[in-house]
Image 1 (spheres, rainbow, N blue to C red):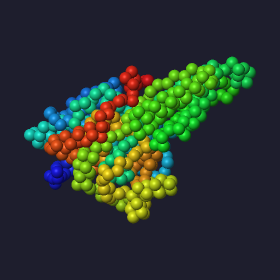
Image 2: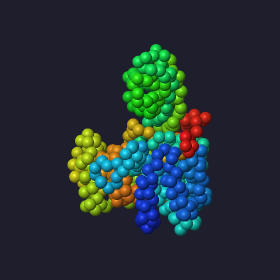
Image 3: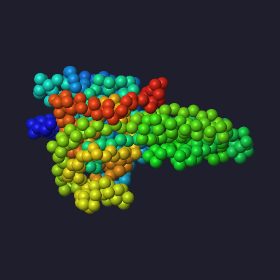
Image 4: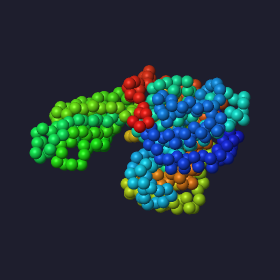
Length: 480
């Protein structure tokens, strides 16, 4: 199939014509900076925009107070666009500068660019809607999925578990990055759990024998989990944070303490097995300290299933639009950000693009090219994404576009600082155009969807989706 100039020009005109609306909305969500399951202002803004564009909204889907589905059109195929809008804790940062300066100490910040991600997907949905309006002979349905808590909580997992993708034919997403490319690879599955220990308080000097330390239990659990590392596969990961140390008085035996864990592995069965072993370690720590232990699931997501059929179509459209053009002041700001990065970050980023491009991007750290696409070898992402749960249920493709200086690490203050930059907006709009054109191409050519579905079946090889979040675990509600 061939991308027509007419489609490329049409989508570009629609999105550029409403670019001020989209960039303003992205900047507002940057300001809201709401974290997991608390994205009430962000979700409301997205829904208001979609309603004003003629979409029908279903709110509170899958028990998610900040989740929703917006639909437009009739008939098949049904194409889903996935939007995220959650921020990260402790990443507050002033925009538009190249020095670390939190707006609010310990405040939130969009350190993964989800202010851009959600609006980019929304812009794509609006463009597809406009195409359906202007071409009434074309049948199809476009849906925007408002997906909260991607960073921690994994809203798409609940949507997948409750069957919200069963009638979807293809799903598209993107992520802010420092390169322009279509992703082809897998990721780690993850289970997030919090472990609470309860003991007995006592005077640590006068009557320590009467106390049972919950903090000791946390420390013993952490030691036990560290010993697990030698006995698990190389790609698996275990990381933790002590979220309640039991107080600040060393002369008191801590009666309660808490630690939260992320366990990752390339396959769902592997991560489930590792998490079960971790629970046994926690039980052992409780036995050793004569404390009580309980744990709760904070969320989980599967490993990502790529789909080269959709990815090739997406890459074709990304190339058709091409990388944005940048002004000298944009290069200057990107260079100032690049110079703040640790040398190791710069070196690892340079290794990704090779010795010819690395020095060029070090001097002008905004890539003005589209990286080539290849499905000959899957890349592996050590991190996790709840897009994976969608990809088990429906053919899914993702692109990345440059919204930050080359080499900028995600989950860092530098990402937050660039989140309202003009080049971040350009990358967001490029992603929107690419997804919109891919969606329309899939609507106009049913054979794409048919082939993508067959590829998904072939990749799964008879495996079926097995949600890692137990059926009796539900998303937290306001105030929880």
